[in-house]
Image 1 (cartoon, rainbow over the protein chains, first blue to last red):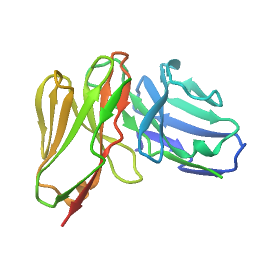
Image 2: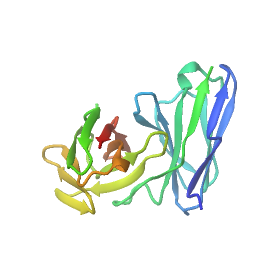
Image 3: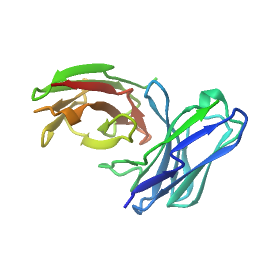
Length: 115
Length: 109
């Protein structure tokens, strides 16, 4: 049983296209996150939603738009893809973003390559 | 700015012990995490420290000194499957996780 799932796992597309990545968690968690991991392996938070409400919105181009239809889903839509968007995008979830002993559970990642 | 520093790469021998250090400078502190990430896979949780001292969990232990802004992950009885990147992350005053770039650990027979 997959706890945090993402689709697609691989995404190869042309510059200028619009694409979406979907994420679902079946852990009953309240908080979900999107991270970008670039070629240097830094994990950078992009967005975080708690119970469908945006709580973290880092400095990310507005071409990136998260959507949370319910607390089990957090999708990421990217408009006008650029070469620099090539990276691995991880979705994660946690029970409550403020709880002391809190771990985040990560999805398998989506490897995006923009040509 | 906020900063997490870890060595880029370390090499150790199967059966040995290795210590991976992490130093941090963040806006506030609400806990430090260590995650393991195998190549091409997602990070998985290893340990959590919020008070000073050593937390032991099987072959892995993690130490924290808040006054020094310092932590280490100690791996004992190394196995080939321990070859991975080890990510240090600190939760700041806004409960946001700040991540280090990770330490790639190479285990040799």
